[in-house]
Image 1 (cartoon, rainbow, N blue to C red):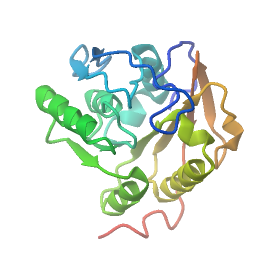
Image 2: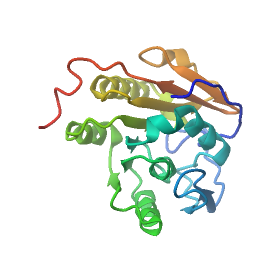
Image 3: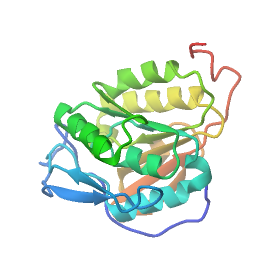
Image 4: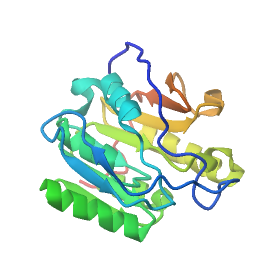
Length: 231
């Protein structure tokens, strides 16, 4: 993973979904552009759903610049709170072996599948609808190949401040880190004012882009990292 710091701005999501203290302002339907890789320049349509605000190009470009080509190539991308699925599709464009999107909002999950069809990546992208806290460990336990993972934790910002949701997030991050193959990277997205020292595990490489913070963590493989996987 690249170590050079980048400068940029633009948030992905503001206070979120049902848990937000203030209503999420819709930015309206718009086109999202895949920035790099084989699908660079191709368009993913965002339908303007008020429950989701996609990561803007500038933040996403910096995210993938930090990861670097080496981390993405041949990896499995997990877009845990997928929204538009743009992170999964950007990963596929840049050489990820395949990607899994988990999204609780059924209409948004449908738009992810429609975008995958237009991009002709349905054979490499799987979309699941439901509770990410339950589905992610279930799916990861079925992984039998040692390909590294790129795991994007970009939930509604309010999840990080809600005691119950943040506890679930921390437990999920720890679980994923404990079971990640060698070479994996975990990525978190929070509001820029959130205290990143609250994240479990250490050290996190923290980057701030305007109103958004990204955290990058490379798990250290342990002897039990594959114990729960099926043969």
